[in-house]
Length: 181
View 1 (cartoon, rainbow, N blue to C red):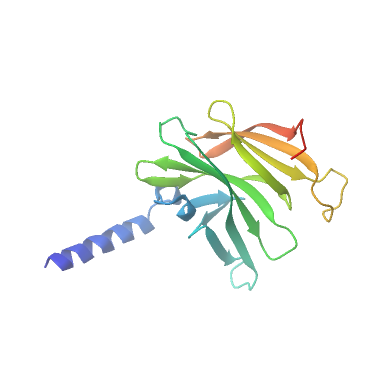
View 2 (cartoon, helix red, strand yellow; view 1 turned 90 degrees about the horizontal axis):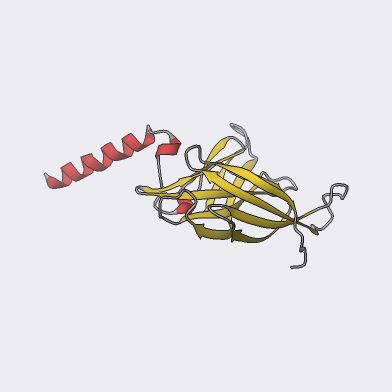
């Protein structure tokens, strides 16, 4: 009898979580949370997601955990959150890099909207910025360089997460003063 009760409770909870909006479903591990990338919800499983580019299409959109993570309280609740980079590739020549945050809520991690850093860039360090901000450093190409050129132009982006909307505000984006790495 107890076994049937447990099975019923598990079934009920799983059915209820399927009907909740993605922003109310959280994960115990940030590599298994849902993030919004280019307007689409992407649920990572062990740091990876693969979906059809279009219904019935053989082309796949692959989203992967890249790294460069930093642990910092981004929402001011006293718990460390995690910001990190993900990549997205649809099989073409480009690999798009994004920064996301996993906010550590009482019930697990909730994923943020992604901010595009660029296509085929060379990520460098992600570091703590002033207050609740983070700074993402990367190399990009100069405006007139072809996509085949190696990234060599040092850039930094300072971001602050709005925990209410789960979106980053970009407070500085531009060339780094010191581009030697």
